[in-house]
Image (tube, rainbow, N blue to C red; front, side, top):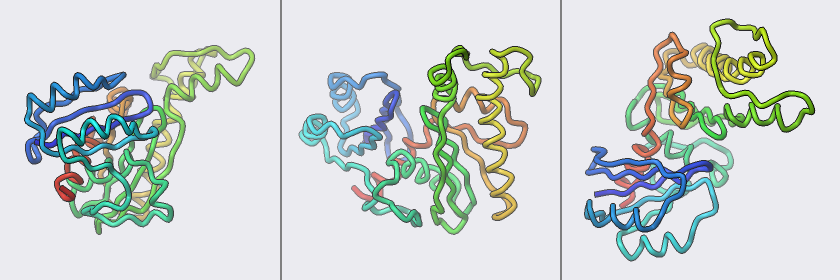
Length: 239
């Protein structure tokens, strides 16, 4: 049994895999040790991998090492794809895991992974198994909060998508600017990558993926657990 921990900026995900099969997963605002310990005992976990976008909790790692063999994800591990990023040591661990998940699900295919959360990340792996890089942009809530925070008169607007392209009120204008801005952003990446590489898979993941997936007419794969699947694939290759 493999335990995969994805520690993000806003929340953390925990999953247990039996080989490649997901048998348990849960999202936490805070990740209590008692819950982790109970899961390790329940599923008789033997190997653990940790991916964190925050500074690593050394105490947590030491506790985990007493219960299982632990791997901390970084760019020096053995991957099933090549990383062409010029500064791999600065590449987000969640981005590495996401690409690993995309490649595990769509071997020998071009794939764009859009991870929509606190920040939106767009990462691309070619059909030859080469990670060619990606981009980082503000996430949906960050965009809406920024317009409220950095102006005197604009209010905070809750996320909502409208049928009409142009807002008819200030609230609608803020909502459309943030929501449709992200939709058009993704469509722009799809259009430009198709022009250069041909057919591509488009995969949405992250906390806001369900909100956006329904607004695309083109074939989009919404896979909330692809980062966890990638972590499991990396753990199986390195344990």
